[in-house]
Length: 85
Image (cartoon, rainbow, N blue to C red; front, side, top):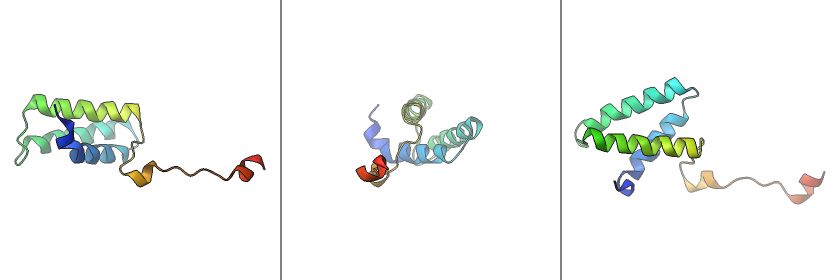
């Protein structure tokens, strides 16, 4: 499946899952997304929804705090003098 077409949706699913602290909440979010994806305008088949959810789960386990944009990817690095102090 071409996930590029669904990248925005996948990012939204990841962000919603990351807002939940515990696993049951994350599962609930994905269940709600499954229901949404079966409706118009998506009208996805169950196997297509399974592939999208598997991709979301893969990304969540690979990087639990998956960044939602490029600004979030930039990490703060203390100045070298601060590290030595």
